[in-house]
Amino acid sequence: MNRRSGTHPARCQARSPSTSRQPVALLRLATLHRVSAVLIGVLTLAGLASTHAQAPAFPQELATTSQSGQFVVTGPRVPGLSPPRDFQPGSGPRTLTPQTVAIACERVKAETLRVFALPDLWRSAGAHIHVAIDPRQRTNAPVAIEAVPFESTWKFRVQVPSTLSEERLTRAIVQAVVLDLSNRPGNQRAAEPPLWLVEGITQTVLECSVEGPLPTPETRISMEVRRQGNLAQVREQLSRSSPPSFYELSQPDLENMSDRDWRRFSAGAHLCLHELQRLPEGLARIHQWVFQLQNHWNWQTGFIEAFQPHFRSLLDTEKWWAITVANFTGRDAAQAWPREFTLRKLDEALQPVGILPGAGSRARKMPLEEILGTWEFPRQLPVLRQLLQQLHAIRINAPPDLRPLLFRYIELIEDYVDSRSRVGLTTFVRGQAPPSPKLLARDVIRRLRDVESERAQTVIEEEPAPAPSGPPS
Image (cartoon, rainbow, N blue to C red; front, side, top):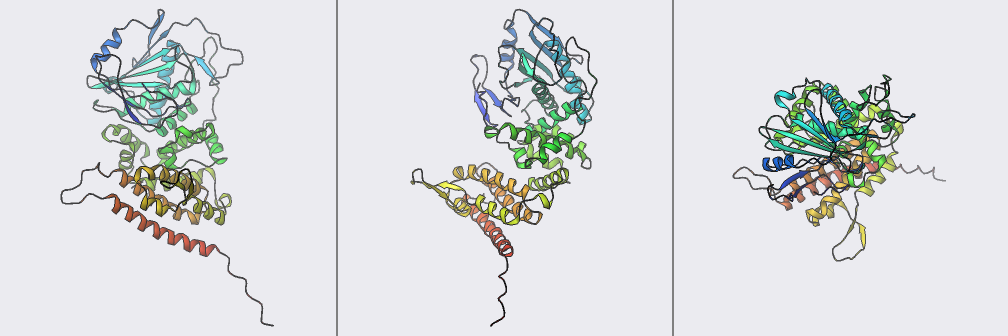
């Protein structure tokens, strides 16, 4: 299987070396060493049976069943461990044993269900989760999760190295639990929970955990609150750097994400889940969304459907998120960029650097209208995605009176990318002509010119009035 770190979430195909198995469809949520990868594999029962028939990988392998019976943890026997004297819960990698991981699974599941305010009904509708501890796996390797169809439900398999930090282990267990919740009932297709939801739950679980997921061997349990129990760390993180937009939360650029950007993403995901829960009937709408994920091809469609009274589109969600972050961080007009600087950054963003066909390596700034009107869509798409990220970053720091203008640019580009991406893929009503790429390009250019006229008027208003001339001599 292709498990290279740093690739975008994507769907790919791979074949098992065993001739008794069918092709395995893999779905990758995230592959950074900071993030546990989720690999949802669809295997046949013959393949599953052949896997279970193999001899144990380790001669001294131990199997432990968790208290509820949902988790079965296997791994090599480890002699008694003595933690270092300066050990602090959550500080650095921990050596995993089947016993400690089984306890961690139950603790993390209990906290996850508490976040959702749900009872533990896994025996009537849930799936078994098998956690395998593999000492041959590198500590910083992605944590893989396989979803295997079994009768009318699923079985999930999580493979972890023998040394792992509490945070990464927690994230992997949260992913498995959310996959279980979002794939009830049936096993026709595996749901795809977004990374920001998993990360938001992970940080909430870690924040609320008094003892920590992993028990510390041969030490007394510290009942000290390990975290501040509120969003103080999130506020500090988002206040000292530009908070992520909802677009950045929805489509994180994992290939180019630095450690600092990941901390921004993690804090943003934590806050987003917290604020969604605070909406009227927010928790019930989160339940509806998660439990219906299996019925939608992408999570965005189900999200808008579940939160319809609050958001009619992703742009509405973006506006809500911008206001939420501004109120949470206290970012007001005094902290915003100056108008002149904001308009200059907008002008730079709207003229991406492009390479003309046949021009070798020579590049020049190109007006957005030229890109939309002359380029093929495969060439447009990466440029437009980068432009959206830039516009969201400018919008977060823009003065309040310029934010509606930025939202109009964002809306027209997102509408165009969405409509253009669906050309040839959507079944249209009989008697209606499907939209053509030329018509879509013509429409977005018309809308762009309208917004450009509004921007030109804003620039004119920004220019200082000429100084009055003195009285004639």
